[in-house]
Image (cartoon, rainbow, N blue to C red):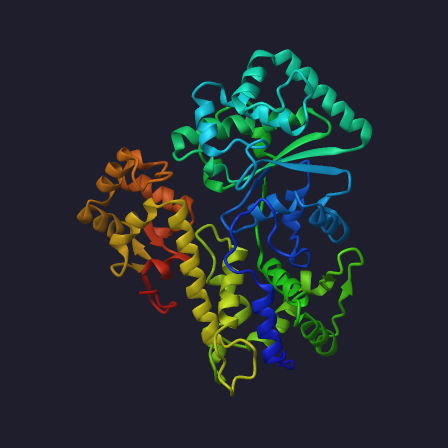
Length: 491
């Protein structure tokens, strides 16, 4: 084994550099130096790719905010040129959290507008606002005035759009309008669907422009809804969809990028990389950020050696400790959801929490394997709280299963507990009352099997062979389900 990283400095770097459970904001909360662009994300940032799909915590809101930050765009253009975000790209935000009403209609405004206007005209008014349509478009008016003008003046709208696009072409600029948090367009699916469908239509229409583009950050469950995609040529958008995925090598690259740029302890981490592993770090002149060595971006063997010098060689002590797993693979494996994806937010939360726990004096490494296990429990708690926040009905569905189910199990065990507690009937009643069922299951009308399908779609359940159901640890632990030989569930 290689020489372990220094305990105190490395633990401090982990706490300094890894974000706490962040919240979406219209401006980036992380320093530029903590920005890392995996290969799949580089394609997602390309202005020419309209539709970006990602699970919660995959980076949708981060990139929505970062792309609108000139400082972050300059950094990405300098260090990650494959993203094709150059100085010629101008951005603004057309929908998302914490935006001024003059630039983006809020949820209640959208719902009200949709009662009087075609949803497509609403989004065309948003586009007109962001590319500065001149008079007679009422650019300083209220949203009903803007949408009414768009409705009444389709030919003038098309002419102004053409002229705006032509000006951008002649100036060598690209205008990119960013949309996030589409699940917050309204409080229920019947009102979300027409607004989301219209936005996708308008985004597709803009592809006929040469220098005006929309970029939509969307969750997978929305793109799996047939009604959202029920418009002509929707397949053209889907064919260019880019998924924000995080491979294991990407997660560790993000970790090392953050550690190398930690405010007070990053230097100790970089020096150890150089002296022990012969990995030199260079500095970006414009941002002063330290750039991750190429091997730490791409070589899993090198990454594993580095991480095991932080966390130790095995998930247990003693000569047979490796039988419990290797930290480099064990950690991401226990954070996979039902879609076999890992949220970097969960990954960072697990490591940050582990770094805040005590290490036995006799343990030579900065992270203790039992602390990593506890970190996974904390990541599960955070992940489940996010699901509860986004889909409150999940709590009602999972409560009868807590402490009663050991996975994998046959689907009949789950359906039997739901039947005993009248869970689906209770959920239907709440949905009809509009109480505590924000975004109810899309397939609730199909009964228990439909709800199971929705849980699979959210990544909470996996369907195995023989009709068995598995629940990934990242959800299982906090929801209180058992698994033989697995990390203990929270009580």
